[in-house]
Image 1 (spheres, rainbow, N blue to C red):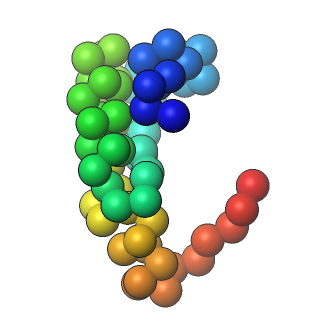
Image 2 (cartoon, rainbow, N blue to C red; image 1 turned 90 degrees about the horizontal axis):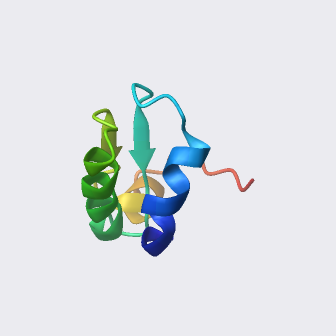
Image 3 (cartoon, one colour; image 1 turned 120 degrees about the vertical axis):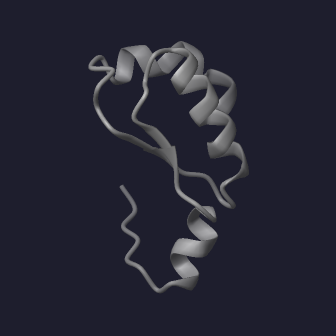
Amino acid sequence: PLSQLEQKLPGLVKNKATPLILVCASGARSSRGVSVAKKLGYEQAHSLTGGMRAWREANLPVDKA
């Protein structure tokens, strides 16, 4: 969740040079998440434009983990 990103991201991704793609339903929250990640030093953080909605509309594969 966006509200927990600042606290949890450093423990999940220790190498700040790792490229990150943040995803939400429409791309709005993940764009805010990119701001949080960059504030923490993750310069390779990006938001999936259009979110999962656009991904599904493009008929791209989705696997549930």
